[in-house]
Amino acid sequence: MTRTPDFLDGYLRRLGVADLGPDVSVPGVDALFALQRAHLERIAYENIDIQLGRPPGIDPELSVRRFAAGRGGYCFHLNGAFALLLESLGYDVTRHVGAVSSDAASREVRGDHLVLTVRVGGGEYWVDAGLGDMGPHDPLPLRAGTYEQNGFTYSLERLDPLEGEGPGWSFFPSVGGARRMNFRDAPATTADFEAMHTWLSTDEESPFVRVFAVFRRDAGGADCLRGRVLSRLEHGKQVHERVLSGPEELLMVLGGLFELDLDDLTPADRAVLWARVERDHEEWLAQRRADGEPARD
Image (cartoon, rainbow, N blue to C red):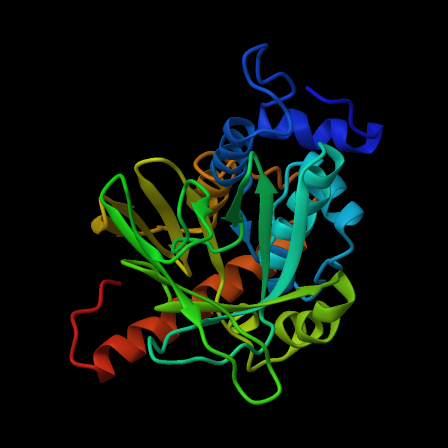
């Protein structure tokens, strides 16, 4: 593999791709696909430190060191570090301002998602390690169309300009916690996301503050933990769901299934985290009852 700065070594070891083999050229399309797959499978999307009231910054080098230490993050951390790694390997990467929405008709781009596009091998790809349970396992060609990956269906459409904003793209997943993701063609920098990160990671109205969530994507589906509810998506459908029994099982799942190193959490941290998880679960139960749906305790 192309030589990278020393501070990236731990990150590459975490990805398990320190050596992609003599037949895989870097930068190249095959290596790009291997890197995204490894990132999704080995580095969880998680908001543990946001739940604990000490959100990490989004400087990409900070995120790289965080991943090397066994932790994850959300889109600003995951895609920010991934962009830095890809650039260090010689890829032509552009960052873009994006937005994730539960409204399939929304054309808004408010900046709550960091998007990457990569040019390599004469083609251009949308690359994303930070969409939790809704993103594809493999990069998608940056062209309009419908794409199938292991029972999941995705589509990309051109996004027309809005007043004061240029054109872009819209991504539509078949499953997951949101219905649409939009982004603009214009390039962005890490600084463009700082204000939104502050709001998302500290404001009581932010979904990242209100709901504890961890995701891990693999070729067949996604493992999803929201509050105490652990579920599995496969072939575009939820195949099972269960409620974690207590704090011991929570830590076992985080360290096992999601491969997170939580040795830095003190007993007080763990108590606070479980209290937040319990709170989320009670709110989820109340909402399901209000909606007339069965709620598992």
